[in-house]
Structures are given as structure tokens and as C-alpha cells.
Length: 351
Length: 270
Image 1: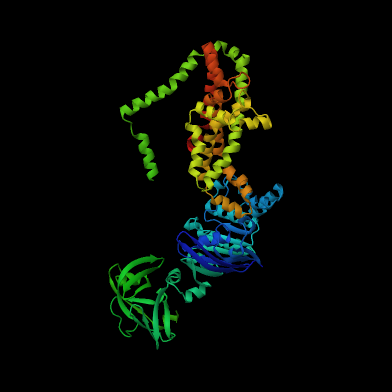
Image 2: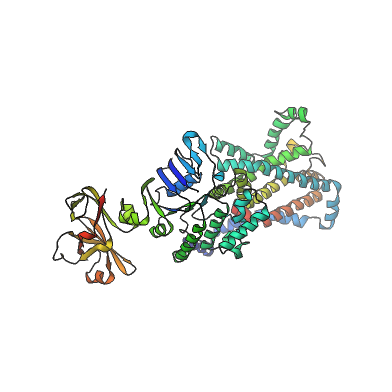
């Protein structure tokens, strides 16, 4: 039903947004990108709070924006819900009045709006807070009130701007689960902005990557992970990504390093390698000398039970090794080490 | 962290003697006149003085007129404050300057200027009288106009500052929930600036209540019609001290009540 099809072009400050985004009914699209990539601006444009210069926004068959035809449906008539990063609950109203707001402004009688809002609060397990002020809530509770308030207004499209950013790291996982459960109840389409890859994978049925105002890549988490098309996407999944030219099973990277990749298609390719597939050695590895190069350890970051090592040499590479291996090899900043990658662990695909 | 440090430093440090001495002189200068007023007040005859018809009528008139001026200031000042806070238009600083002019203009000058506009021979005064029979000199309406003129800037200043400090995204949030511009203003913007609105109104009211120069110039000094408390104080002073002191005390009590009731709010919104 509520399908969103949007092409958005606008300039705002130094940002030039030129992106297309789609979302089917019941689908959650995770919109990821660096700070300043245009994620929030894209949401504001979909909500009608920022005007398009060119493009077209169609929701559920209704044209909401089409500057060339002079169409711009104002925010209050769009039925596009927007959850702000800091929730923005109305401080001078009680919790239940906040949730009832969207119903009241639509002309519902005060008593009916309040009782409908109570139902929403029950559903979100917030009933005991109904008559309190927003300032008395924790971040997670405020988020749920904001969600209830947005959903109560009966939107066709729900936009969430970093819904978990204001939550303490410790409380994030349970809140993420409850957010997913509540979003599943909502029949319209939703777009969640995040810069946390875990969140993007868990919340999004599909991921859209925005870079410098443009869609750099889109697909399921698995598609993005298996074939990242930009350094940012590779970073998102913690992968190594290089660009190179392939000829007869030999890929020459831009830095000149040659990798043996028997399956590589000919021509310009992208090469991605999981950091778990990168082996580190204290000295030149014996035996098969292929896909091996020397470098200097640039950083060592503990990551749960493994260590993420950044090795800089003819190409920079990230490797995940066990804590034990790291100390055995003496992997500290400035140390020398050799990286080795099995040919079968390298994924190459057309650039 | 650094904030806490600044606070503790401000509390514990002792001021230099010269600065402390001048500060004490300042406090005495502000306080002694009030003390003198209280000491010289004819406490025994207070009730009698207050019961005098001209004093009672001045009190009653002042109350009505100052409230009317406060209402008018709200009615005219809030929309202007909103426009100044939200719309970037050419000449905005000029308009803001105009709105704040009565704050620095001597009230007498304001009264003369009002005469030149609304007086019988003024720019539009004659027209208003011919068309609607509106007259300002010697009428209570004239006092309302004079008091509104001097009281308005306080309201505009405080409400504009509050509107500026408001996070406009709350209004965006309301719009995404289906609220149109007017509903947003009424249900989100106004309630959020209500404290400032209250502070502005009280300050405007206090200013209107004490208005003298513009009133006597523009509306005249007719007992029962245009003679407010400050004008009555002036007249009483010609006859003897007691009446003037009693009326002054009334104004002092009102002023102190305002200050005490609003002290936190005024400081935070100014």
C-alpha cells in the first residue's frame, strides 16, 4: 500500500543532495552515511520541511512534491511522521497530551483523543507515565513516547532520525529490540537514519548508503557486505577494499601490489577481503609467497576477544588476530609484520 | 565541570574593598529613599487618606487603565515579537529599533509626539474624531494610548528574546503531527513562551502603572478621567506631603510585590 518513491534534488549550505529512495509498505529502509552526507536533510525533505529544487516525491500514489509542476504539499498534510533524534516532546504538555496531539489537531474530540492516546501508551508500556511531564522520563521512555506520538497521528511513512543516538550505550540493545518490535506493527513504510552499522543491519530490510548527498550503494546487508562498492561501505562492515585491474587471474592494485585472484573477472575490479582472512606473520612467511607483503603496524585496537591491527605498507590492510597471537607476534605500534591472504579468501568483482 | 569551577570561584573570592564600598553606596542610594518614605508615612491617617474620593478614583483609574494598556501591549506586541524573531526581512533592525524607541525616549517627548499624531490637529487625530468621534486629550482612552506607548517595548523585547531562544524544531515536530501554522502557534509556540509572556506583561504593566510624562502631556490631568496615581502624587505634592506619601506607598507596595513575585522569572528572561 503505502509505497514511497522519491527523487530529491536540493542544495543546502555546502550539501548538494541528489538522491533517489524507495520504500515499500512494511519495509524498513536503513539510511546510512557519514555526518554531513545529507541523511537528515533527506528526511526533512521527505517531511516537507525543506523544499526540493527538482525531483518528485510520491507516497501511496499521491504526489507530495513536484517542483516542476509547482506541487508542494505542506508538512501537516503529508502524513509523514518524523521522529527527531532528541525526540522533541512538548515540555508543557503531559505525556498523554503529547501522544494525543496529532489526534486533537485532526479535529478529534479531546476526550476521544486522550483515550486513544492511552491505548497507545498501554501498547508501549508507558501507561503509568501518562500524566507526567516529559522531563521526568528516561531517554528510552522519551523515545517510546515520541514513537507513540508519531504513530498515533496515523502516518503513511515514518521517518526516524538516529532513534537510538540519545540512548546510553548500555541500554541500547534492549531498546533496539523494542523499537524493531514496534516498527513491525506499523503498516506503512519507514526510513531509519543511522550511522551505526549494527543498527542498520538489524533495523533495515534494505540499506541505502548516502555519500556526499548521493546514493553510493543500496541493497540488503548481505549484498553490501559481499560486494562493498566504496571505502565507506567497506568500513561499515569492517572490510578491506581496494581498486585494481585484473588480467588472467592477477589483480594489480592501484598501489602496484599484485594479488593472485584466480576467479577475478577481467578489467577494472574492486577487491574486498575480510580482516579475518588476513594472516599476520612476524617474519616473511615460508611456503607460498603469493599475496604477501611487508608493513608497519600503525594501530592496534582491542575488539572484544580479538585485536584489530592496521598494517601500513605498499597497501594498508586491517587484520583481526587473536589477542594471544598479537602478543606472541609482538604486534605493537611501529613493529614490522607481514600480511598474507589466501587467494580463495579474496573477492573480486567488476568496479 | 568548568562551569562548577567558575561558580565556586565566584562564591569564595572576596571583592576588593573599593569595589565593595561603592557597591554599598549604590545599595544605600537605592534603598534610603524607600526607607524615608516608610518613616515619614502618616500611618495613623493612612486609611483616612486612602478613603478620600480623589485618591480612590486615581487608584481605580490607574488600575483599569494600566490593565487595559497591558492587554493592548500583548495584543500588539506578541505578533510583532513573533515577526521580529522569525522573519528575516529588509529593515528588520529598523523595525526593532522603532519598537524599542519608547524605552529610551523621554516620556514627555513621547506624549508630545503622540499629540502630533492623535491630537485634534495631529496627523490622523482629526480624521479619527470626525469619523469615529474618538478623542484622546482629556479622555481615559488617551491615558491608555500613552501608557501602551511606553509599555510596549518591554513586552516586545522579552517575548522576542524568548521566541528566539525557542527550538524551532518543536514547531516542525508539531507540523509532522498534522498541525497547521495557526495551531502550531497556539498550541506549541505560545505555551512554550508563556513564562516570558507573563514576565513581559508584568513589566509592561508596572511601567504603565508608573507612567507620568506621556500621560500628562498627551491626555492631560483631569481627576477621574486622566489623573492616574503618578499624576495624583504630583498634584498632592503641591498641597502637602501626606497625600503624596500615601499614594507613593501604594506604588511602592505594588512594585515590591512585582519584584518579589517575578524575581526569578525576570532575571532569567532578561
